[in-house]
Length: 366
Length: 197
Ligand SMILES: Nc1ncnc2c1ncn2[C@@H]1O[C@H](COP(=O)(O)OP(=O)(O)OP(=O)(O)O)[C@@H](O)[C@H]1O
Ligand SMILES: [Mg+2]
Ligand SMILES: [Zn+2]
Image (tube, rainbow over all chains, first blue to last red; front, side, top):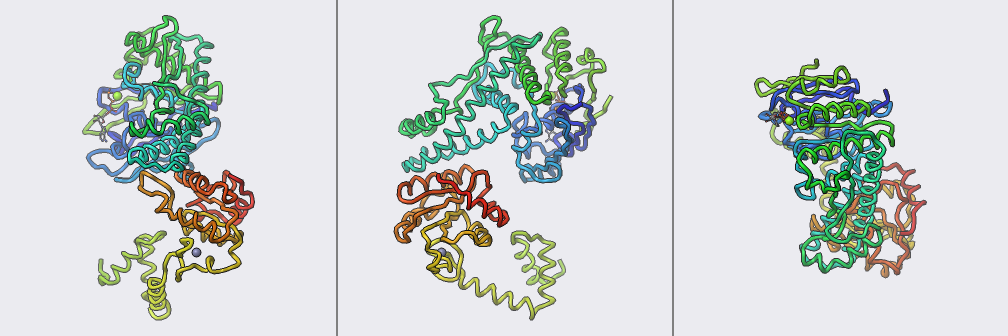
């Protein structure tokens, strides 16, 4: 089937895994085992198939298996819409992460054009109640899944802004230097804002069109103060804000201040004021809608990483989640402590048992 | 190691050169030592000569053996065009393609507040001064497509606006740093298709 999935994955010295291999056929993968067995580590390795630091946002050296700390390697065969790519990521001890696609070294952002990976982690349970950073990252992940070039814009914006902030901190006043940076911030910033809006439109449309057991959310992008989203206006806004920014020592307007606002549509209740279970259901709903929209757009659902989602859902919601994941045809890597959590999947999923012995994780396909 | 320490030291020094590692350095040193009179001694003399004479051209930043490099002393290259590049390697890549008949200005880097590289460090004031001194009509910016490269291009454009025509190499061509890795034909095409900023 011409989907988007890893057909083979090999880890070497990656966190608790000394050597681990998974052969997969595109079905969802149910991963179970006791606490500390190495389930999330496995998902983290898969999360590295999209650009960035992965779902734990960890430093590359941290992923090296301890105590050896010899560096690590993750190799996968990615089936991407009928094409197979061998993707190799490695990191020598003390070195940086290197990427090779089909034997050729490639920049990390190239991954965004091959793989689309979306995740939900237990740490995201507090997404709606904690700071805007997490929600902005979640929003950018959604945008990146639709538009691989979102990653380039985000990096360019970030870089130019850090340069501008340094000028502000050092109280440098060369207007040509500011203007040079601001013109790039404005171009990248406008692209980021447009990408986020377009991505949310797609997710909202996908929610409206679907029959789903999960609640719909009304979504929006909010800023602490008015933020011009058009390139020229943003450039003007930045130039006019220089004096104020100099006093603050940092840039006060721009897409880096965005927040994702969500309302539980049926109740008209802001996400932060919903119950714990409702907040989780909203997140799952957004991830599923994202996947559906993407499937409609590129012809395949993204790879989903659902760390411990099963545990938080009652049996009915759980069965509904599995049905939706299967209907999407997504390769969903799902973790839980016991096999019973995945019973409702029947033979619609592969199963892997993860155990730990002597400080080393072991995988057993069932 | 079993080699005498002088030779081992030479291998270590060679191994630090770009493109060489311990194995290839060892091979090169063995090769040279075996041809002491024919190759090693002349190489050592040539290296000493370059060490004594090599210096930056005070006008453009190219590497030469005199105060002014051959390009800056050649009156035929004073055609009213200056091509601004990041590195000497980029300049040499342009020269290899032999499509450009004007002069150069080597910045030696790109603007970066985070790395404490400002306009002065990049010889931008000298570039501004050269516009009148050399009756320059067109400045071609052949700088990297990175944020720092484009910041530098914007900055220079801002400083020279209304004094000269400003162009940049054709969009979509990876330039700067990578110029050195482009084949001559690609450089030629990028130069011929240059666009006003
Ligand atoms: N760099 C590393 N080297 C060796 N072991 C590591 C490294 N990083 C993490 N670990 C260990 O890997 C083990 C498994 O972690 P992981 O998060 O994958 O567990 P899990 O199976 O998801 O457990 P839980 O059900 O509690 O979430 C932990 O005991 C952790 O200490
Ligand atoms: Mg876990
Ligand atoms: Zn010169």
